[in-house]
Image (cartoon, rainbow, N blue to C red; front, top):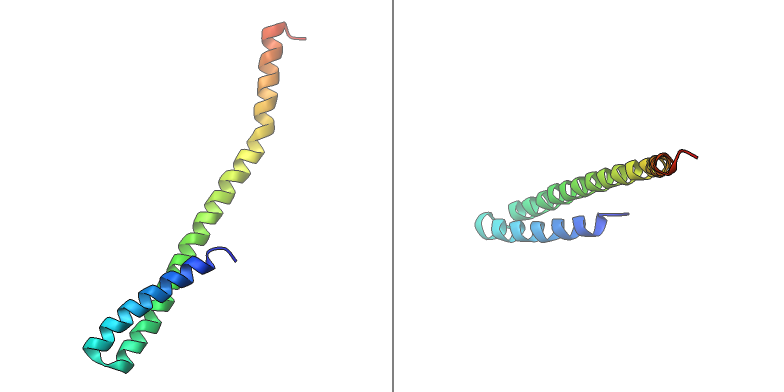
Amino acid sequence: MPCARNSLMSGIASGVGVGVIRIMSAGFLVGSHWAVGTFMVVSLGTWTVCQRNIEVERRKIQKVVEEMPKRFIKQKDKANDESGGS
């Protein structure tokens, strides 16, 4: 599954960071809730952005693949026109 590793790593790092800060200032229970919440939000956010970027790239590739035959036809027609139309 693309994007999963990077999304989970970002979520874990963010969750640990926010959790440690909140544990020092508000106590263990509140800090652990913040850590889990931060992990979820960051993981889902980065996964969504990554999936959207992959979809945009797929669309661009599909467009290029669809345009390829048209380019070759245009080049052949242009070459035939320049050489006398045969």
